Image (tube, rainbow, N blue to C red; front, top):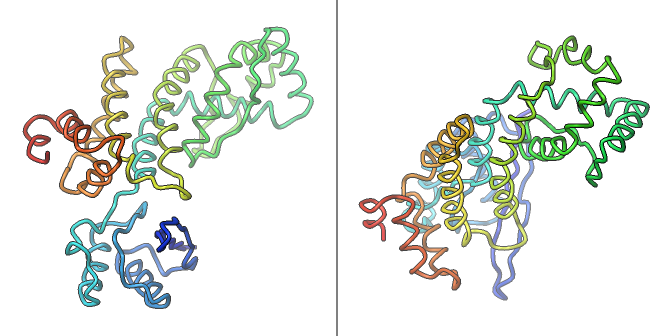
Length: 310
């Protein structure tokens, strides 16, 4: 079923930030024209004609153009619609991370299946806890199974699982059923996960190290009860620095993965013309002002492009 949820964020006359769901409804499809039609109808129903920006995970430029044309007719197209489409940062992070997870997909799948096997039975879970005691693992968080389409849950699963590596190894030696499950149970992709070996744990540790700054950034910019636009540019710059440091890492695989993620980051945020509202929001943050933004523009985009935008 195709559906769409439309939420408005606004500040009232007392400078209080509000978040209200305007509509949650089925739609014919996620095609540009259909989405634009539903959004415009909803705005009409609520008597809303002043829209500064639209932020959606899968909204393309054609849909935005249709909305912009309608706002022109209403005489309310702010700044001629040049900054109507505000990129959804959490979705862009999701695109970058999902592609990187595919690089170590087999290792992630093996850890996921091992966690699933142990959590399927209370008897197995008790035996696994005994293995933790034997290996003197006192990590307070418990094993958690991820939702494969939610990369943040995959990160949390891997982050916890790596702390129990020795317990998994001991459990595998005590219960041959784990190995049998990994090499025979057919996963959603039509293939079994395969044996969980030391190189898989190495991949998991590398992935957790890379994903941690993305996870922390997602938490920071996903808030709906506080303003986030003023920190977007700063967080993009910090993420770029983190990836540059990872590219210099001695581990070749981690370096190559970080380079691909940096390329993807620059693909979505590499055009300063589409980010001017983010720059302005950062300038208006009294902790940054123009001095920080001027420095960061050159750092992120280079002397020529960054200097021009400064």
